Structures are given as structure tokens and as C-alpha cells.
Length: 292
Image (tube, rainbow, N blue to C red; front, side):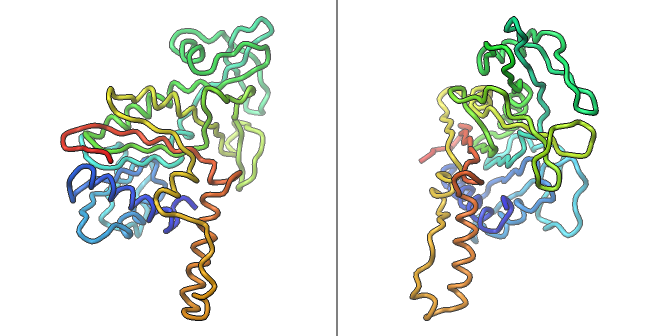
């Protein structure tokens, strides 16, 4: 759904806005964790005439057949480009360790066997302990946290490849004031939630502490914002409102298309669903960049 034409068009508008703020008609679009390159191709198809875009799909897998030849396929984000870096459900793929407070309140790493059996291991120390203390302190026995330091570092490195522009991360997320007391680690198999057993039969994921990521990539004087996908897409012109019924008699085919787009928009912005994704918008200042 996040690679749908409607979503890609919204991202294209964000890219166009970034180009205006950079004062240029030539920008980069960097799609982190690009999958099969659908979003990068969709953005290229949606950008207005006159805007020259160099699109990069950053992915470890091999380039898929049939992808728009204008999309550059790469294993690492390009260094020093100006434009929009977009990480859509990328950070939740960065592995994290899980910590749990023992009966004395000491945070220990959770160790797990291939069959899902768990035990508490060694105490969390060093940089990971410092991260927990700052971002997700564990006080009560049995409470859990996912140690987000590797994600902070991944985000800071990715955003740092821009010489100027906007870096955006989109994920299910939480903030310091509302961390879930028992963590968010879960598994998915064929679209259904299942226990997170590391036996290779399911995808294991956890929500992202995007506020910590924002702090890790912070640049003095540069603004960072956390907002819901619902709000972010509304700003980019995506609305789930139904088209006027008068259009049905005047242009039946157009009405059907508009109705389908409204349904897609409603799904992308729904409360309790995709609309609850969090967007981190992090500006990277540079020469000529004047955010509105």
C-alpha cells in the first residue's frame, strides 16, 4: 500500500517542495530499503515536468527485472546529494536486542532459542545501558524494552549522506512519554501476527523509538518534526473525502476513479491503521536550503 500511486504522488509532491526550498530544479530522491523499487519508480512517474530527479533505490537484494531504468540500484545511499531521503518502514528492519528488568530491577538481555524459549542473560552495560537510561528506562521487574541504539546509528548515517535537503523516516513508532511497558516485538507470517520465534518461518519486527533517532541525527539549528502519517499526508493533499455525487452524472468514469482514490486515501490515513504510522521529518541544512 505504501508504494501505491497515491502514496508515491504524495512523496513526489514532498520532493517537489524540497526542490523549491533548495532553489533548484535538479534533486535526488533516495529510497532507503527500496524493496523492488516500486516507490522510486512511482515517484519518477509522478514528478512534474521540468523537475529533474536522480532516483536511487537502496536495497541489498538484486535489482528486479523491469524496473524503470532511470532508477539507480545501489547497496548504500549515495554521499553528498541534495534532495529527499525517504526511509519507508526501513528502520524497523534494523535488528535490536531486547532487555527485561529482573526481580531486582536490573536490565538484562533476553536470550531466545530457536523454538522461542527465553531466558534472561547478562546485564545490559555500556552504550546500550546508557541508551536505555536516557530513552527507555526499566524500573519495574518484568518490564521490557527494545534497545534502539543500532537504529539511531543507522538513521544518523543515512541522514548524514545528504549535503542538504530533507530526510524522512516512516514507521510504527513510540515516544518517550508513551513507551509500551512490555515492548513491541512481534512476528508476522503471511500477513498475520504470530509469536516472534526466530526459526526462519516469520518476519520479526519491533516499533521504532523515532524520537531517539531524531536526536541521534540532530544538526544544530535544523528542525526535526514527528507527526502522524494521517497529518503528513493531509498536508500533501491526500484526503479520504468522497467525490461530489454530481460528478457521477457528469463524468461517470471520473467519478469511479475519484471514488477509488478516496478509498485508497482513507486507508492510508485511517486512525487505528496506516494513518497511525509516524513520520520523522528531519531537515539537513546546506547551501541554498531555505525551508518554508
